[in-house]
Image (cartoon, rainbow, N blue to C red):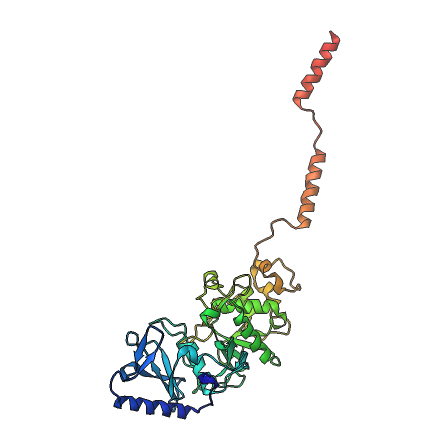
Length: 394
């Protein structure tokens, strides 16, 4: 069995056990105990190789765990002290329960430890800057389980939940906040699966949000999802807290207006975001870190100056506004419907041939000019006829 399969423990119990073990290390002789990292390497369990890890953001009282690191790299987490023993990180991420498969809501402390490891430790190179800030203790989250191991997660905000701990503002709509898929599990459509799960979890809500800013890989996931689920075209928005109409932007409209950079290099790179599929198979390439960044403030997305799309839209109007707002589509009929299956047509240039009416006019003009000209024989033909007459006379 693995830590997540063992009986649940409370936060204070885990912290208390860690502190007791840390105190016992002070009384032990140096190099008295070793932890086997692999067949060829091991680490001495001493105070010099053990440090505390804070699990949650602004946590009071603190909830900390002990981490063991190799002497050459203090930033690396080689093992965690859980349930009275040291566990390798890979083992903490595993489960022996056959019921853990797919997306499961996080409830226990051990599951939150797994979310912490995925966002702060796993797939992180030495000295690499953290892209995720610590999650709050009460963060709503789902873990994605495949083949007996945790391979990703996403966090989300409920409608009515507090935006922060000081302003008193609340989210006005459910919002997908962060998404992560382990590097070895990318290019399998897991980002698309998590976005679809989020939307289906709030199927009764009229509008849903994705936290701003959107990474290029997340834009690709949203584009593919909206192409497959046209019923969400007018209901999925990029949002900044608290998500009022001055802080939300329709994602499909922004895609069609070219407000996002799809980042072709990032989409084709396995390290650019969620673990991605091939461009023609799935769009969630490089979705390693998507929405919530380490900084607390998010850059304001480019304003849609072509038209007023931030005002409350009439039903059925947000998608159709693309034609009225984008000059490159001025030739299209305002009443025609934009289909998600033909996005290439929306970004195409001017037509390669003139309209049929113009062709008809030019054809009539050409025919009239030809009929007005007198028919003349070529000079060479006239000379040949004169020579034949002279021959007959002689």
